Image 1 (cartoon, rainbow, N blue to C red):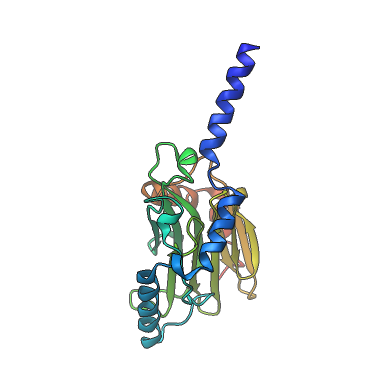
Image 2 (cartoon, one colour; image 1 turned 180 degrees about the horizontal axis):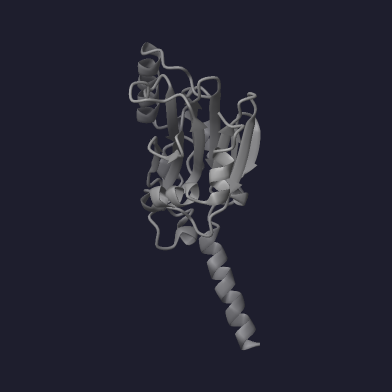
Length: 248
């Protein structure tokens, strides 16, 4: 009986630490979003300035326009609860003579994911690798490639972007919530990221797309992402996926 009680206490303690975003807190966030007294005016100002800049250089819009919504001060959820986000790309991967483009979104360790990350400082919550015949040394720019991750839904995070081929535009949106709900949409195909956070896209000569979803045995952080992706594209099954006679 004593052992059972100790086990119960242990699992209850772990559960409380792992789940600190409840329906009560979600309802409070909803109230704060609608209450001007809680809004962070500096964030609103920054978002207006960012949108004005991107409109001025006529950058093609990502799947969703980054409209300006008033946002409650992040510290209302918990002091220093927001720790940072990251997004990026890599154009150096190749299979045979074909070029692959990688984009990713990551979030830093915080109070909502720390029990899942353990010793890691961050987690890549979305990783996409696209076969593309479009890019060269002169056309990798904001007009032809975009990737962006935003914290305005804190403690939920959303990223979006676009990767071009000569005849196609691969658009993607991905999100992860404080409760670890995580999904992505790539050109209208829905992916449950619990089944794998890495999405491979191989455009075909007939204009269709093929996808493959890869689940890692452990959480991938930014530090290990490049090596992880390189190991993937060295895999025979993935080489065949990207290097089929039917791919572009």
